[in-house]
Length: 543
Image (cartoon, rainbow, N blue to C red; front, side, top):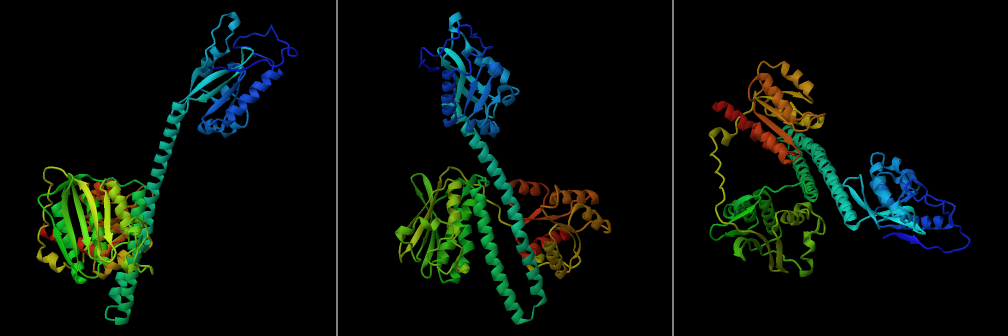
């Protein structure tokens, strides 16, 4: 509908009958009081608009355009909200088309022109924004146009803008977490390696060994806190994609019970498993296992006597995994807050040996990710039951093959003396720690921190190294995979490779699997590295 300002002073404001009412002419003198009042009102309406809007003053080919702040922001032209700009300057590639769309609003009814109530303008933004333009009339003549976004167009534009911002923020956060995960783990990795070397050097000195043991406990607590915080941040960032597949709940629960039974027995607790029939669900076995693992760890930690039951039952067409304990119990008014970060009911002194208060926070996030609701019932002084509900499906899950029995060499631990290892890491502290550890095992090694040094290091070797030990992230655009590929190509043989990483991106894991690499996640324990190197030597000896 056109916006019209009726004549207020019929006598005192002469009507110019010679004015051309064509799109190429200025409809009315800018000194006319009604002209000024109409445009002033339109400017206020435009500026106060809650959707993108603009005011066009004058005929299209010579128009001055004023945007409100919302439209100026969309156009990335903030000054357009504070001053008039020519249409061709504001929309250099689109103003001709916009002007053509505006021309019908400037017709002359006196010569038979039919003036539409409004026209639609499509602005060249991403996504395209549709504005409805209505003429500003004084005595039936257009003195300008007020265009504002249609409700559907404004909502679509804002939705697309918000989606783009969410995608940008998520991508930025993912990059930050990948970098932070790597960089924060590096010092812990170096400390762990130095501690292992130090422990070897002070062996036999009881006082020094006690100090080293306390240092190891402090480092373990720090590593657990760091890992938990990074896990929560990664889950909050939405970068974890569950690998959904058929999962045998019987096998999963039995495996977890076998894992935690020694801990329970150490506290004098009995851990029992109750499962019925063949239960299969569709979920991510690693993430689902982590939920149940956290619940079992909490049950053992907060139970002083009695026992724990790990149960499975069918309810309303779904499987319900339950963890019962005879622990302290939880007051009814605390059943929700226990899932908050760093919330512990029975650890006011924040003793890190009694947990960090992050396990249930991770459980809650994982349950949302897997669409596996979790609930808790408890009575103070009697115990608690935590339950995870998962989908029930027909069929059988693919059972994992049992690991092959250990060979005599693996069971006893193969000596590593003389094993030649190429070590690549751009962090000097971590590199030094790795070299000290390998030296204590009797390994021969060459080291490098970038690709240029890699070629210099292997140039003096008479043959290929027995293993490549490399960090995944190296300076520039070079990765550990590039080192592995180049060295293997240089020696024309598939050299065993171990990749050290603080990241858990599935793309990296797939790349490593394609190359047949072993992965060790930082901060790694030297014992884990030794086991991998022993496997490499054992396989080489068997060939």
